[in-house]
Amino acid sequence: MSTYETDVIAWANEQAAHIRAGRFDQLDLQHIADDIEDVVQL
Image 1 (cartoon, rainbow, N blue to C red):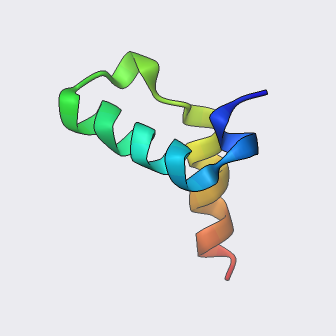
Image 2 (tube, rainbow, N blue to C red; image 1 turned 30 degrees about the horizontal axis):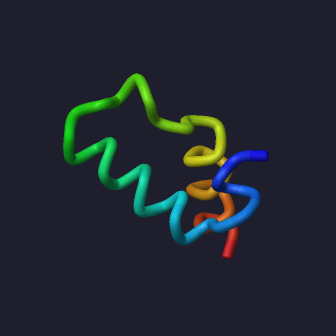
Image 3 (cartoon, rainbow, N blue to C red; image 1 turned 135 degrees about the vertical axis):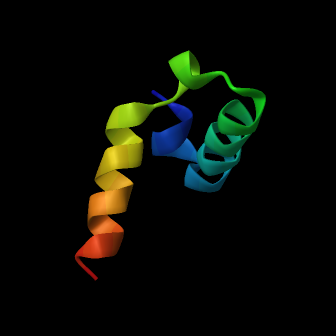
């Protein structure tokens, strides 16, 4: 089970840290894309 499924706030903070550190290869791109699509549909 991923952090996304257990604690979405912690997951978001992890993703932000990866972006800020330039660790793009560690991003959870599928969930990021899903969340962006969810926001657009609101």
